[in-house]
Length: 384
Image (cartoon, rainbow, N blue to C red):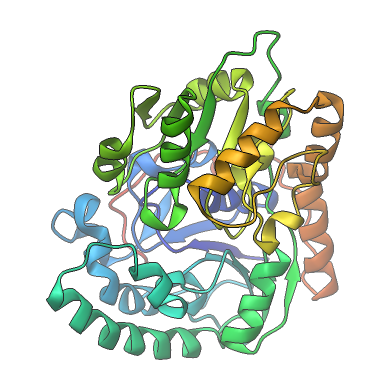
């Protein structure tokens, strides 16, 4: 069986990229495709993998302006030739689900969410600092992209969603059903420290819809120490909101993330997400995070056992949740036990069982006997 793993693009390093990493490692001898692959945005265990990219890889300043090329990605996806593969696993929050495969192939799309900026444009754009021209032109372009997205949603034979909330979005947007398999979490990567420091932690890309502004303002008003790890276009605005108790550390290595997560009082999670990745990653420690309470978090947080909810995205509600959190004792053993239900092993077992049910059973890869899986990085390679 010939297997291809396809991702939208490796232009940032987040939860979706770590899913691709585990999909790639889960199956034997896969080929890896993406429209664009930036070397410093590859997840750790894919940095030695050969990525077959599209012609977009060679566009001017692709590393800086990949967002501005958004109308070209559908054409790049269509240019990829996957006709020789029997099983295609796409990882998509935007374009990869639209790849075309042979008629006899099985295409399974792991959908992180339908295109956020297409299906929730008003909500997505409301906090962006768009000028008049952007606010006039973008809705027209988004309608065209939405039509393409609806058509692309017919390409996969099966959808897998990362949460029940995303499965419901898929149903509403695409009129498709989706199996729910929660993403893999590297549970063993995080260990509680005997030393708990007096700071809260945010781990996130700094973009407006993540609502990091709530955490910055709540901690500034209460003079709580807050460390923000991550970078993005909203950083300058967030720094302007921050008082002396808030520090921005920028992008950090995995080792530094593990260090700060193991010693923080709690992880603050102010935005609505498709799956509470970092919430679970930081959970094996004595003090849990304080998340907001959209429906997706009901799947990952047990109120007053593994986390504290706040019900509206306001500075006041988040501040109240921090106050309630500090009055409660938490069990690190219970936190870790809950997180282990989202481990890499659980993810692989459930995904293989799903593939078996849809008629594509795959065995585990034999890494020791197959050195061909360890290859040089070819960030400028084009798709065949």
